[in-house]
Image (cartoon, rainbow, N blue to C red):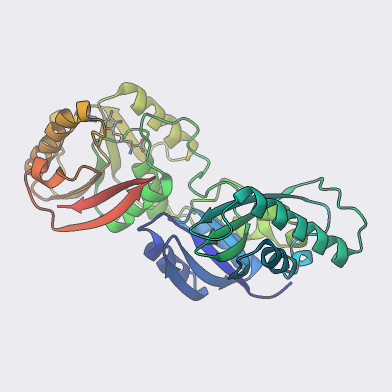
Length: 370
Ligand SMILES: C[S@@+](CC[C@H](N)C(=O)[O-])C[C@H]1O[C@@H](n2cnc3c(N)ncnc32)[C@H](O)[C@@H]1O
């Protein structure tokens, strides 16, 4: 096994810079952000720590190969050139997925089957096997073809890192955990100030803020597919996990929220319980039009409804005006709001001091800070 592997951390558009910043803070080498992700170099141990610790990243991959391929022969040769025996010992099954865009190789199905054939041929040759049984744990491989450049990526995370393990019930329009963490990170909040989400829904923003302030690694309560890769089985996963868990602290925090919908508040309480944050994060049922807090300073962070359907637009815009009234009732507070509505500032009735383009799934949004 090579000591350092070329790696790739995928991220939603707009979050690549934040992922690069986290990788640099973790002292990883060769960090370079690009559209949709960040390249870096890491040892297998570092890869495990990235899976545990990264807040804004979707998945962490080993970049097994990359080259321009314009024919299936070239694709086969590229995949065959990868030393697959470094990652597999014949006791696994390969799960290959493919995505193609703006390229001569435009059939994901063919790219998928050729990649799988090349992997199995290479392993049979390297491990002196006559058949490859394809039984055992699944090793996920992703083929990405974009503008004729093929990347062969080994997924070390398994399911997306936004699945922290505390959210088992979804509300109407839940925010992805990675984006919620980014909203907290990009806000002026620090743990010495109160944080309040007046449209808290299932509680994602509040939970992510409490994780960050308490130095609870976002991946600490889930597993990663790399833990099943045969050559990695000797890595001290439980020792690394315990060391990261031991970094958690219990600062005095004021992290609270409310929502008009009692069912959403019930879900938020379940999630808070499942995140082991009962007593740290509190939520209640309340329309924010009735909310008045006593603390002279603090930060509101919220993800209100966007009014995607025309029929909802009018009521959402009235809600934005009411959010401004909430801020006016709390003159020492900041207000941070994400919305896809291009008329947000007009409806709110004030220009933001700062704004940033972010994506909520496929929806282009702006994050406003007042
Ligand atoms: C997009 S969802 C928020 C999702 C949340 N970030 C999560 O992770 O689940 C918008 C929320 O605003 C709430 N809402 C709408 N009008 C409200 C009001 N007047 N007061 C409080 N909450 C309101 C809705 O009930 C809904 O839960």
